[in-house]
Amino acid sequence: MEGEHKGKAEAEEAGGGESPPPQVPPESEKSAPATEQRGLSRLLTRRTALIAVVLAALVSAFLYLRHNPAPLKSGVQKAKAVLGINPTPTPDPYAEAVSKVEEDRGEPAGRQAKVEVPAELKQYPDRHRFLAIQAASANEAGVRTPHDFAELAEMIARGDGLVEVPRLGRGYILFGVGGAATGELTHYDAKQGKSVPLFAGDDELKAYRDGLAAGRAALEAEQKDLGARLKAADKKDKEGRARLTADAAVGRKALGDLKDKEKLVASEYGTPKERQTLYAEYDTLAQLARSFGGRAYDLHDPASVKEFQQRMLSFARPAALAVLEELAQVYESEFQRPLPVTSLVRTDEYQRLLRESGNANAGDFSVEPHTTGFAFDIYYRFMSAREQEFVMGEIARLKKAGRVEALRELRDHYHVFAFPEGHAPDEKAVEKETKKSAKGK
Image 1 (cartoon, helix red, strand yellow):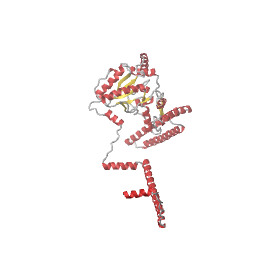
Image 2 (cartoon, rainbow, N blue to C red; image 1 turned 90 degrees about the vertical axis):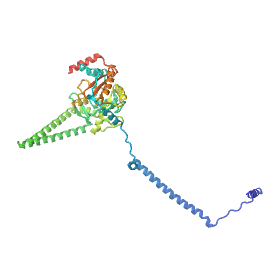
Image 3 (cartoon, rainbow, N blue to C red; image 1 turned 45 degrees about the horizontal axis):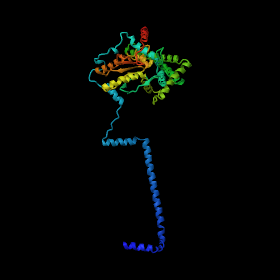
């Protein structure tokens, strides 16, 4: 190795002789690189095309699964089934809360439980005083009460002192609030005590009237046929004649109800001004239904309308919500279950509906407490004696402090009315309302 380096070094120091001339390859060797380059180019082209096809297939598959995830989910589900993996269902917080409310206490509950009712939750010797206190309080606050759902929708949209109460809130659960809602859009005529359907315009009104007319014609024809059959029936056929007579009675009642609807619509929609007023009420409901806290309701679907009405009945005044949350949180802290609330704000129309359906707690008063938005009802049907006495004790404490009016009602409810300003109304105003209520009775 040393000799090779030494010889090379010497040659460089000697002036580095000329470089040897380049070796020219034979003709056959000149064409070889070009041929190799063309082959390589074709190979690269084929590979590029193959990669493009694969990428296109992957993109197509991704887009398909993105918009049609069922096959992917199906495959995942099959794999889980093979591996014996059972997915854990997502718990429903509301359903869990309902279960806790209805849980068997293992002892007498509701009215079956023996409890000591505090004096603060008993009726006054003068029964008019209980309602007079609430009426006086509402009058002092100057609140407006809704006579039907259109007016309630207007109050909600305008932000007229009402706040929505969540289905599952701080220590409480809305338990059947608005359960008697009919799913029908109506205007309430307080003077007649009757509800008339609402329509978007003349076309819907005409279609309704045409339907009533067709129904009346069909019932009249049926009554005529039943009359002829009864006349021709053998007098000895008592069973057959009794059946025809009963059918005729049912038909006459249905015909009478239908004629009453025709008269009511004719009366309420009699003039152009009256029609426009009622169309405006429908529009008020439609505007709120289109965007109600991020959700829309279909006013042509009775089920959707019922949900819409139940949502509107889940509102209350801030003073009522504050008292509700205070009671609910101490109850939940003590018993680890939510406080069930069955009623919040009501309309005059809804109050009448409850009364006619047999709800003894839904009285007929000059100022119905629930229409003010300051009242709510607590359901004690599933509560043990200790639970009931705890809740009544808390309500009694608030009443002693002058913050609420309250009563242990029939049908497993505690009625609570929160005073708007946190104190009872002036006694002179209460006496005035008491006399007014007594005269009305």
